[in-house]
Image (tube, rainbow, N blue to C red):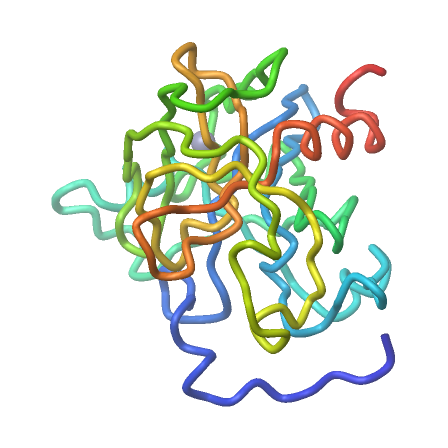
Amino acid sequence: MDIVGTVEEDKRDAELNLDGKGRCCTGFVVEENTNHITILTCAHLIQHVFKSSDPISVRKANELFAVHVLCDHYELSFRRPLQSIHATRNYARATIIAINCTKDLLLLRVIRKEVMNLNRRCRNSHRALAISPSPPETFDKCAMISWPPLKPRTAVGGAVANPSRPFLDIVEEEEENPVEYTMDFIQADIASETGSSGAPLLDGNGRVIGLLHGGFGGRFSYFVSHHDIVQFLMQSGILAN
Ligand SMILES: [Zn+2]
């Protein structure tokens, strides 16, 4: 990836982070140990700079982008009435450790002691979500918990409309698919909005069955499949083979 284009201004401002800078997505913990936290989110957090046939490397992605995360506990503290310690949020720096441009998946690692809760280290657990042992089926109930800008803990329930919807069923025009995605999605009757991308789709036991890719403005949202998530986490050494 040698060429970086400029994104027109009217396309930039929709996903600004909570303090009005950069782009914003939701992510969830897939591994926690004493030294670090590993977070799964969508690769299009850094969209406009890759496509399936020309993927960006982890090294290049870290060179070009600075990713910062905020944990849910910090946000709750920040919103506490009379909180005046910080005027703006204090994010922790994350490192991109794996990316799959074809499947829209990105893994971030954050040093545990750098995760803050206002002016202190966050000492709460950031327990990893369990990945479901099996993929969902049509009519299975599901829920998505996401964090669009300024709307933390947005929970939406629905059902699986199609567990294996080809991407090419959704986009008809080539220009609607600049990244050249070809994967199958979980289609669910769940509404989503900008900044929810990367949110977990959960089954009735609270286990991960999908990850939000996008909603395309309709009543359905489309999720990276359970199979693709499991493969990515196995390739990255987060899940055992
Ligand atoms: Zn925390």
